[in-house]
Length: 346
Image (cartoon, rainbow, N blue to C red):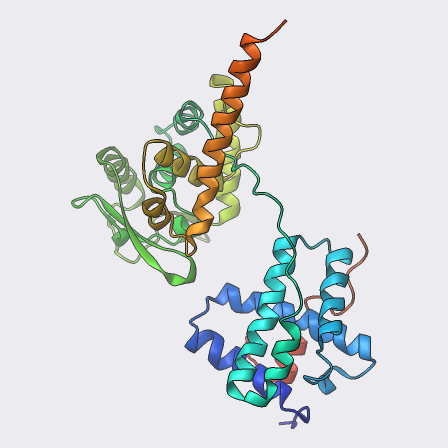
C-alpha cells in the first residue's frame, strides 16, 4: 500500500478523523449530510490547490485562510449559481471542520477565528409554500380507478401519503409491519433515521386492508408495502415511479376540478396536509413533531403561507368594494480527492 505524505500541520489527519469518526459516530450525521460535506470539501480542496498553484496533497491549514475560503464561496456562487441558502450551508460545513480541529488541537483555533469573520449571506424572504386546496386533493385521490391493480395501488399510496403528510422517501421505506390497523398508527423513519409514530384514520386503515389483500395476500413483516415487480421479483418502488403516476392522476383530476395545480409533485401532498392541519387549528409545535422537522423554524412556512392567503383575501375583498452559467471546473464533485487523500471508503 502506498504511503500518503501528510501535510506538515496535520491537516489531512484531522480531516480524515472528522469524516470517519466525528461526523458518523460522535455527531451521528446522516449519510446524505456526510455526502454533502464530502462534495463541499472536494470542491474546496480543488479550488485551493488551483488558487495557490500547489498539489492538492500539499493543502494545509495555512492555505485555507479567510481570503481563500471567501474567494471559493464567491467563485461558486457566481459560476454555479449558488443560492444564499447553499452558500451558507457550505460555509457552515467548512466551519464545522475547523471547530472540530480546534477542539482536537487548540493551537488551530486561530484558523477557526479567521473564518468566523466571513459573513453569511442574507436569505430572501420565504416563498409561499405550494399546496392544494381540499377540493383539489379530493379530486386527485378520486382520480385512480381502484378496480384495477395499479389504480388500487396509486390511490392507497396517495391517501396514505396525504393522511401522514409523509415525505416520499418515508413512504417508500415503509414495511408491512409499520402499519398497525388495530391501533390505527404508522411508524415512519424520517431524516437522520429518526423514527416517529403517527395516527391514521379508520378510513385509511380500511384502504390498507383492501390494498394488502391484493398486494400482500401472505404478508411478511419486513416486505416493502409499495413495490414493483422486476424479473419476477418484488422490489421497492422508485420515487420516479411515484412522481410519474401522481402527474398522470393530476392531469385526470384537473378535468373534474380546475383547482388542481398545473404541476403536482409528491411533496405537494405533504405540504397540503400540513397546511390543512394548521388551518384546522393544530399548533405549530405539534405540527413540527408530526412532520419530523428537526428545526421548528422550518414549520413556520405554513404560518407564513396562511397569513399571506388571508392578506390576499383581504386585498381581493377591498378591491371588490372600492372598484370603479459557466462550465463546471474539472474538479467539481470529484470524490477521489477526499477518498485518496483521507483514505475514505465508499
